[in-house]
Image (cartoon, rainbow, N blue to C red; front, side):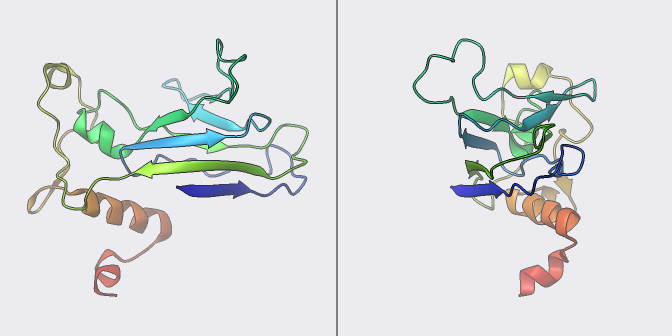
Length: 166
Protein backbone atom coordinates (compact mmCIF):
# COMPACT_ATOMS: atom_id res chain seq x y z
CA UNK A 1 0.00 0.00 0.00
CA UNK A 2 1.14 3.50 -0.73
CA UNK A 3 -0.30 6.69 0.69
CA UNK A 4 -0.51 9.32 -2.05
CA UNK A 5 -0.68 13.02 -1.27
CA UNK A 6 -1.10 15.78 -3.82
CA UNK A 7 -0.46 19.09 -2.09
CA UNK A 8 -2.95 21.93 -2.51
CA UNK A 9 -1.04 25.00 -3.53
CA UNK A 10 -4.01 27.09 -4.66
CA UNK A 11 -3.22 26.25 -8.29
CA UNK A 12 -5.82 26.07 -11.03
CA UNK A 13 -6.47 22.95 -13.11
CA UNK A 14 -4.18 24.03 -15.96
CA UNK A 15 -1.34 24.77 -13.54
CA UNK A 16 -1.49 21.67 -11.36
CA UNK A 17 -1.99 18.63 -13.54
CA UNK A 18 -0.36 15.45 -12.40
CA UNK A 19 1.63 13.72 -15.09
CA UNK A 20 -0.27 11.20 -17.15
CA UNK A 21 0.75 7.61 -16.56
CA UNK A 22 -0.10 3.93 -16.81
CA UNK A 23 0.58 1.68 -13.86
CA UNK A 24 3.52 -0.67 -14.32
CA UNK A 25 2.08 -3.74 -12.58
CA UNK A 26 -1.00 -5.87 -13.21
CA UNK A 27 -3.75 -4.05 -11.31
CA UNK A 28 -3.99 -1.10 -8.95
CA UNK A 29 -6.61 -0.74 -6.24
CA UNK A 30 -7.27 2.92 -5.47
CA UNK A 31 -8.98 4.05 -2.27
CA UNK A 32 -10.13 7.68 -2.47
CA UNK A 33 -11.71 10.12 -0.05
CA UNK A 34 -15.34 10.79 -0.91
CA UNK A 35 -14.88 14.56 -0.97
CA UNK A 36 -11.88 14.63 -3.32
CA UNK A 37 -12.49 13.95 -6.99
CA UNK A 38 -9.74 14.66 -9.48
CA UNK A 39 -8.85 11.38 -11.19
CA UNK A 40 -9.22 11.44 -14.98
CA UNK A 41 -8.76 8.68 -17.56
CA UNK A 42 -7.86 9.02 -21.22
CA UNK A 43 -10.59 7.64 -23.47
CA UNK A 44 -9.92 5.73 -26.71
CA UNK A 45 -10.90 9.00 -28.46
CA UNK A 46 -7.97 10.76 -26.69
CA UNK A 47 -10.27 12.85 -24.45
CA UNK A 48 -9.82 13.20 -20.68
CA UNK A 49 -12.83 12.04 -18.69
CA UNK A 50 -13.44 12.55 -14.98
CA UNK A 51 -13.80 9.40 -12.87
CA UNK A 52 -16.52 9.89 -10.26
CA UNK A 53 -15.67 8.93 -6.69
CA UNK A 54 -19.29 7.76 -6.40
CA UNK A 55 -20.26 6.09 -9.72
CA UNK A 56 -24.00 5.96 -10.48
CA UNK A 57 -25.73 3.48 -8.21
CA UNK A 58 -23.19 3.79 -5.35
CA UNK A 59 -24.20 7.18 -3.94
CA UNK A 60 -25.96 5.62 -0.92
CA UNK A 61 -23.12 3.25 -0.04
CA UNK A 62 -21.45 3.92 3.31
CA UNK A 63 -17.95 4.08 1.80
CA UNK A 64 -16.69 5.07 -1.66
CA UNK A 65 -16.05 2.14 -4.00
CA UNK A 66 -12.53 0.87 -4.66
CA UNK A 67 -11.35 1.87 -8.12
CA UNK A 68 -9.51 -0.83 -10.10
CA UNK A 69 -6.98 0.27 -12.75
CA UNK A 70 -5.69 -2.17 -15.35
CA UNK A 71 -1.88 -2.04 -15.49
CA UNK A 72 0.67 -2.82 -18.19
CA UNK A 73 1.18 -6.45 -17.20
CA UNK A 74 -2.51 -7.34 -17.36
CA UNK A 75 -2.52 -5.81 -20.83
CA UNK A 76 0.37 -8.11 -21.84
CA UNK A 77 -1.28 -11.18 -20.32
CA UNK A 78 -4.57 -10.49 -22.13
CA UNK A 79 -2.81 -9.73 -25.44
CA UNK A 80 -4.25 -6.22 -25.41
CA UNK A 81 -7.85 -7.30 -24.70
CA UNK A 82 -7.62 -5.28 -21.48
CA UNK A 83 -5.77 -2.00 -21.96
CA UNK A 84 -3.57 -0.19 -19.44
CA UNK A 85 -5.50 2.74 -17.98
CA UNK A 86 -3.85 6.02 -18.93
CA UNK A 87 -4.73 8.39 -16.09
CA UNK A 88 -3.83 11.64 -14.33
CA UNK A 89 -4.92 13.64 -11.30
CA UNK A 90 -6.08 17.23 -11.62
CA UNK A 91 -7.24 19.90 -9.20
CA UNK A 92 -10.75 21.35 -9.54
CA UNK A 93 -11.11 24.40 -11.85
CA UNK A 94 -11.56 26.70 -8.86
CA UNK A 95 -8.22 25.63 -7.39
CA UNK A 96 -7.50 23.19 -4.59
CA UNK A 97 -8.25 24.18 -1.03
CA UNK A 98 -7.00 21.01 0.64
CA UNK A 99 -4.44 18.30 -0.10
CA UNK A 100 -5.73 15.33 -2.11
CA UNK A 101 -5.22 12.11 -0.18
CA UNK A 102 -5.66 8.60 -1.53
CA UNK A 103 -4.24 5.15 -0.95
CA UNK A 104 -3.14 2.76 -3.68
CA UNK A 105 -2.25 -0.91 -3.72
CA UNK A 106 -0.02 -1.67 -6.72
CA UNK A 107 -0.12 -5.39 -7.53
CA UNK A 108 3.08 -6.70 -9.13
CA UNK A 109 4.02 -10.34 -9.69
CA UNK A 110 7.24 -12.13 -8.82
CA UNK A 111 10.10 -10.63 -10.85
CA UNK A 112 10.70 -13.79 -12.93
CA UNK A 113 7.09 -13.91 -14.21
CA UNK A 114 7.04 -14.09 -18.02
CA UNK A 115 4.93 -11.57 -19.95
CA UNK A 116 3.20 -13.97 -22.31
CA UNK A 117 -0.53 -14.05 -23.04
CA UNK A 118 -2.57 -16.43 -20.90
CA UNK A 119 -3.95 -19.50 -22.70
CA UNK A 120 -7.54 -18.36 -23.30
CA UNK A 121 -9.84 -18.41 -26.33
CA UNK A 122 -10.91 -14.82 -25.58
CA UNK A 123 -7.30 -13.67 -25.40
CA UNK A 124 -6.41 -15.62 -28.55
CA UNK A 125 -9.25 -13.95 -30.43
CA UNK A 126 -8.48 -10.45 -29.14
CA UNK A 127 -6.88 -8.09 -31.57
CA UNK A 128 -3.44 -7.39 -30.18
CA UNK A 129 -2.16 -3.89 -29.78
CA UNK A 130 1.37 -3.23 -30.98
CA UNK A 131 2.71 -3.25 -27.43
CA UNK A 132 0.59 -6.03 -25.99
CA UNK A 133 1.68 -8.86 -28.23
CA UNK A 134 4.26 -10.96 -26.44
CA UNK A 135 6.88 -8.77 -24.78
CA UNK A 136 10.10 -10.11 -26.25
CA UNK A 137 13.72 -9.46 -25.38
CA UNK A 138 16.90 -10.96 -26.79
CA UNK A 139 16.44 -13.93 -24.47
CA UNK A 140 12.75 -14.67 -25.17
CA UNK A 141 9.69 -13.36 -23.36
CA UNK A 142 10.28 -10.31 -21.16
CA UNK A 143 9.93 -10.80 -17.42
CA UNK A 144 8.00 -8.59 -15.00
CA UNK A 145 11.31 -7.32 -13.61
CA UNK A 146 12.64 -6.42 -17.08
CA UNK A 147 9.44 -4.53 -17.82
CA UNK A 148 9.58 -2.67 -14.51
CA UNK A 149 13.23 -1.71 -15.03
CA UNK A 150 12.54 -0.50 -18.57
CA UNK A 151 9.58 1.62 -17.42
CA UNK A 152 11.56 3.11 -14.52
CA UNK A 153 14.43 3.87 -16.89
CA UNK A 154 12.07 5.56 -19.36
CA UNK A 155 10.24 7.51 -16.65
CA UNK A 156 13.15 8.57 -14.45
CA UNK A 157 16.15 8.21 -16.77
CA UNK A 158 17.64 5.41 -14.70
CA UNK A 159 20.37 3.33 -16.30
CA UNK A 160 19.11 -0.26 -16.19
CA UNK A 161 22.56 -1.82 -16.05
CA UNK A 162 23.93 0.55 -13.40
CA UNK A 163 20.85 0.00 -11.22
CA UNK A 164 21.26 -3.76 -11.45
CA UNK A 165 24.84 -3.55 -10.19
CA UNK A 166 24.14 -0.99 -7.43
